[in-house]
Length: 185
Image (cartoon, rainbow, N blue to C red; front, side, top):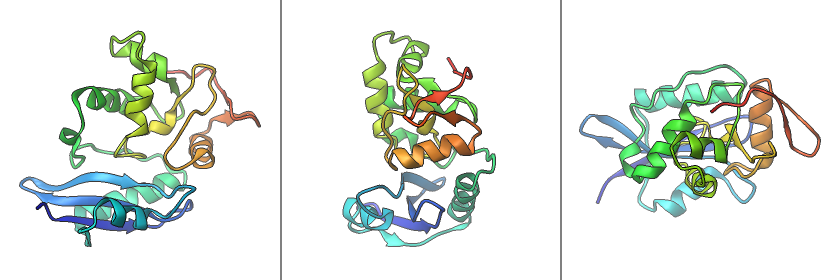
């Protein structure tokens, strides 16, 4: 059995948790659990990975600090080296890497991401892959919205998605439509 650990990260949105294990090449992040409207990230970690124990190391502590700074509005660059992307399917990995390429302060749509991957009718599949993004914030799935620029879904809840986009300088209508011409792909 793999030995998983979790590290709690405070944020303005509530507690997050980084679920990780020590791999041969160093720490491997398997999930970043956001606070959401139905519960706290720490309890979600416990339910998803019953045997996970609290622990940290310098790589995970640094990641936690960068996530905190990002959630406070600072422009932070994230490295994917510690993310266990190999735990994702090939298609999901392609979607996540495309999403990772969307610059701060920009959005894309599920359909545009799909077309960029050569799947012109794959908007729903992209949405499904992003709905199960194990690395939110690091891989900014909050930057992908519906074709009409309405928010769509987000694991941390729509209020958090809206706030993250606003922290990046984007304006939204009261109904939740992103008001921008900065559309990627």
